[in-house]
Amino acid sequence: MSAESETPLRPELEAIPRFKLPVYEGPLDLLLHLLKRAELDPHDVTASIITEQYLAYLELLEQLNLDVAGEYLVMAATLLLIKSFSLLPHPELADTEDSEELKRDLVERLLEYQRYREAAEKLAGRAILGRDVFAAPGEPAPQADGNQPRLTVALFDLVEAMGAVLKRLADQTPRGIVLRDIPIAECIPTILTRLEQHARLEFTALFEDLRDRPRIIATFMALLELMRRGEVGAWQEVRFGPIMLERRTVQQVGQAK
Image (tube, rainbow, N blue to C red; front, side, top):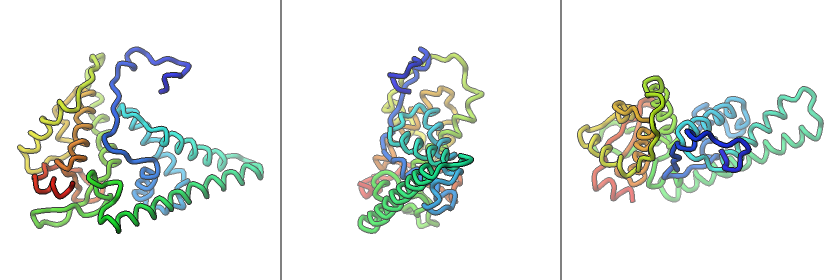
């Protein structure tokens, strides 16, 4: 919520620490992610299911106390405007033309961005938005043990998994706790220790002993930072299956840089 909002935040909400993602993926990335999950074409970007899932994702970011970039909100407004035109019982001709122009512009931007990503992948050998962070969703993750290739996960997959963790823990979280700003650096050694104790660890197991919401979110941000550095890898054995984590070797970290 903006600091210039007419309705001031309650003191308890102002005390909630806000977090910024250590990696950046924009609204077009999110739309492509949702289209891929729904097995839809970019021309279907204005479908109701995409708009609903996009808004649900923004709500999830807010629940995670993550700052949402303005571009995400502009895209949400665009999707809602297009949807509002389609719901009008007797749209005026001008309104119809405006709606179609908005759709064309959004589809063209999405297609152009998709082409840019695909060209960058061919030139660089890896997805430009996932460079040194995450491979493109569904791409085989590198393996040193020769087993069947794993599927890497996207940032959006991790955020969704984090939302599920918070939802399951909501009823177990004590009410009226004192909110604290926990440094991300404080959580990194704990994550590395857990991963050193296990050859691989399911994402949800990393948070199973935590009941402090700020610490849960700080731990999640620390995990993303370790993945950005290449010190931790994440994959799925099947698409949309459980997310697994592992500590990467010094050699693997060097190859990622």
